[in-house]
Length: 290
Picture 1: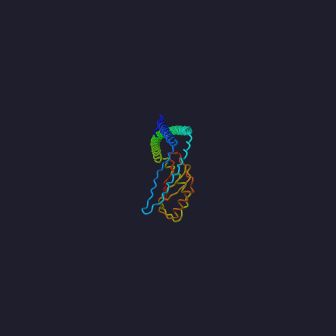
Picture 2 (picture 1 turned 45 degrees about the vertical axis):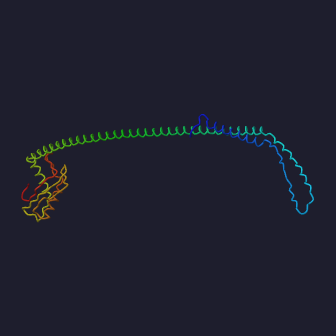
Picture 3 (picture 1 turned 30 degrees about the vertical axis):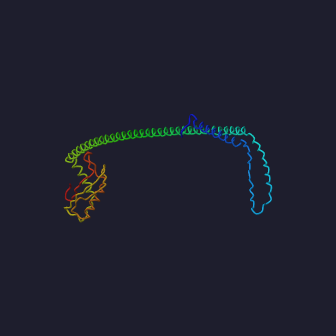
């Protein structure tokens, strides 16, 4: 909408209104002026035909009727002052309407300007709020990224610590196993040496003697009966398992051998603890002692 800052349009409309009112007043004044009445004169000629045969008596020409002049109309009252007053009243009314329209237009423009400013302010606040939300979202995203980096770094360190601990445990395990193997080898060497000694022979002889005293030899056993038996014992000599490896006797002989070993429990203990063996292999015969 084009704004009329200098009020050119209202001024032009007022000028046109004044011209129209002035023209109306001039036309009304011409119609109000009295017009003189002019009577019309009537001339008439009487023509009478005269017959040729017999003359007619002469008739006197009637006198014309007198023309009565109508009185002139009274002049209409001069109402130019009323028209002027009405024109001024109309002008004031039109001016008031124009002023009212101008004020309404100003009010409308002010309202539109106020609404525009309110819209701009609302848009600015909206943009600021959106910017704040974007910045807040970016901040939270940076914080999440930083937390994730820290978590990944902590996880990496934890995995490295676990790996180092595993490697350390593996090293300790290998060292312990090496020490255990060395100890076992050393103990085995000592046991091997002890088994080859007279003490081992005396230990095995004592076990065989106790078993033979508990052996109820069945009638089916021959003089060449020989059984190889695996005996499992606990420290202290308690027998917990008997397994016949080989035996040339029948089932009765094998049952008698197992029963004799269990009756002989606990077995004699060696004088040297290093001679103790959890799993003993015993050879039992009837013709000779092993």
